[in-house]
Image 1 (cartoon, rainbow, N blue to C red):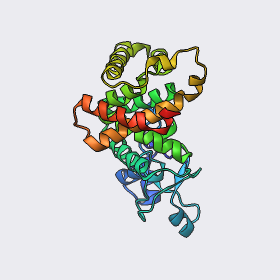
Image 2 (cartoon, helix red, strand yellow; image 1 turned 60 degrees about the vertical axis):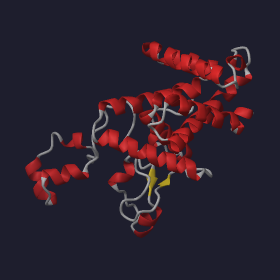
Image 3 (cartoon, rainbow, N blue to C red; image 1 turned 180 degrees about the vertical axis):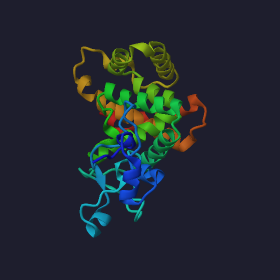
Length: 265
């Protein structure tokens, strides 16, 4: 059964239109958009989420927009879509940030904005390199993993340097992981590392010596610290606005980060 618009390229349109009494444009509008050429997964191949109310009324119902990575609510009834593997308790703040990320993702994909799509792609590769996500996280059946990925996309699309700088601050393993994962972006990584070092000098706190390679315990905590940095960057942008001065954003994010339980631990 064809699901994607590209699956209909070899269809007999005259016969198909007569059979279901629809025009070609109407049929294409019911198919899933082609995003297979993009490295990140924006349209799921599986039913990773659903509307419990709609399914209760119509068993086995599957709606097109449920497959989209940016869909968080049912367009039919307005209720929140449920993940295949329900999320553990998450804060309203994370839900709000995920919602902003979902809107940014939808805008990038539906307008086919190359610059924003590249930022989304790099954000997901960054999560994968730091082992806190992967290229399929946006359509993951794990509710929390998906919300974290959407929230990260919100930062990555609007202020990518801020988010990455906070992650790299004093984090030896993150710097090494990014150099290994993105050798072609060495100059950008060095720029972010320099900004993170400058932040260390302006705002005393965690230092790079805390992440020396011989300290094995930091290998297990790098994911937690990276998630904390992303949360701090998102909160700073939420408080000061995406158009705020970069140094002001970094200063506010650093203050939030240093107060977080993850960094204290």
